Image (cartoon, rainbow, N blue to C red):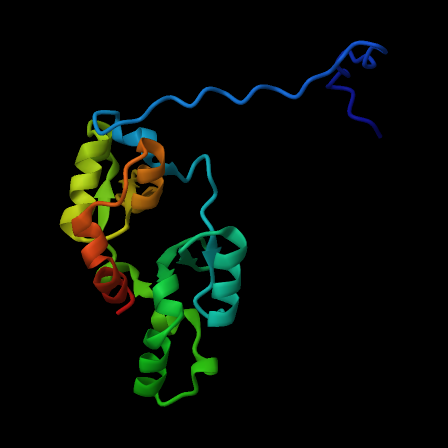
Length: 198
């Protein structure tokens, strides 16, 4: 039985002989170090974060990262609770080999949970209340101090649970403001990515 609460909207057909153009891309607002920090935050209310289960294979994790063009995945359970994150550096190269050796298993037997950065152990975060009043330059300075290419942003709900709001990515910030990677970050990048995978 059709739902009679909603009436159809008026509709028509495209008029013959009248051109129809694709929309113009909205002008990209210039971003600099003095711009609001939220202008460069990847907002998880607008962009759904890419997640994976902790029991997924490393091959699956690498395949998802390649398909989605990302360098890390959030690890979540069936209740959407954050378990940690797995980085590209942690799922490829020498890190999985070292973990497999420690666990006494073949590298092909490893799963995401074996190499992920556990939520409460190593994941540094910024708080939304601090980010809201901050500038892009503050975020860059924080990433530089942490020596990390990205940092998660959290808020709290009424029960004081952490709610994941978004992420700051150095690559995204550089792309938005058009700056080359800083020398200090570049020098420590390989060390940082390695340490993130521990």
